[in-house]
Length: 257
Image (cartoon, rainbow, N blue to C red):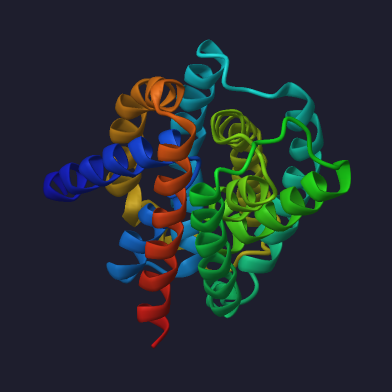
């Protein structure tokens, strides 16, 4: 058990550094490791979101402190993301969440390549997004995040930066909204258990040490992530985000094949 705790502490720390600095990957990395240990998709998603309630709170506080949050964008993303997340929770407790993976993998590959293209074109970042674009990405991102145990950052951060969003404010805002999304998803998992909607929830206790490690590692790394986002130049962030997305897409494709 102690070995499991230390392993997931390291996973949580590294995943949160990447997630807080680039706006994605904590859920994808953490859930991928859990799945590789044989944890069922719904249990992996519930475990990761339980840990994220703590890590996203710390990350959001760091981004607010470093003034990385665009509050107009926050107001567009949060309601749609929460609605999509709650819906996704009830889907993943009823069907296999792996069904959506091929579609998300294709999406990530295309958007990762497009972001790298924009980075080397010296595209000028925009300060505002159309309300429909932000809300649509928020709804899809919340749904995919709940179903797949991760995906809010890859879907929403990728889409907004791909549409011209400034990396610093986009990453800070997406990370801040994620706290409210994660809380809503976690509450939905609890409701699904209490109402009997999720019949296979009994094994969650078996993963308590892993969740504890993810929490401790993620919370320890969160304050560093906001600072990294604030000091890195625009192009460096664009290239880093693009490369990360492509690598995630390649990894997910390799698992599918």
